[in-house]
Length: 104
Length: 104
Image 1 (cartoon, rainbow over the protein chains, first blue to last red):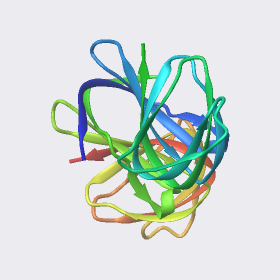
Image 2: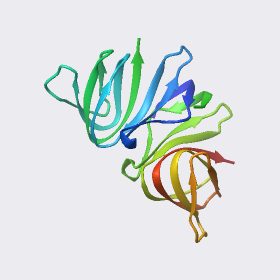
Image 3: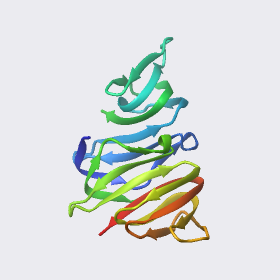
Image 4: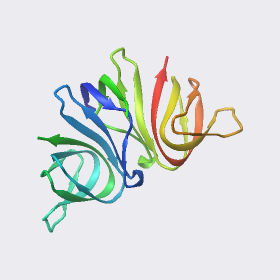
């Protein structure tokens, strides 16, 4: 287990896809923020505004960035980057606990 | 939306009931802590060690404390207390976002 210290947490969850994807926002002293979330098994499409670093804390999935033809499987302990103003498809094969960092 | 400030957040989620109930721990400067969680529709039983205050931030449920015969329906904006070293049944009728405070 690891922790984020001296942060601000938004109490209310972000709820997507009928609750199959949920997350909570964690804001750091420098104004940057991450979300900590859960994705239930299923297939989802997300758009990005900022670039994102998706770290997989538990579970398994495969993802496909906009423009890619192939899916890339990854598992807990691994991560992937998504460009700004883009999108990606994600298929959760085993419940995922994740940390998403929004990059400037 | 409201926030908890100057807190420590545990990065990894607590995952129960195959992920139908998940939560994240938020620890305050005084050492007290709360969990912020999501419960998908379904019926669950929980045990308590400390007394708990369950605040419902979104969704609908009914609960039955240990020893109660009747279920009590509540909805977002409402809360209920559970004694220490006890248990309660909970039936989620619409996805619940909650804040659980652990009381000394």
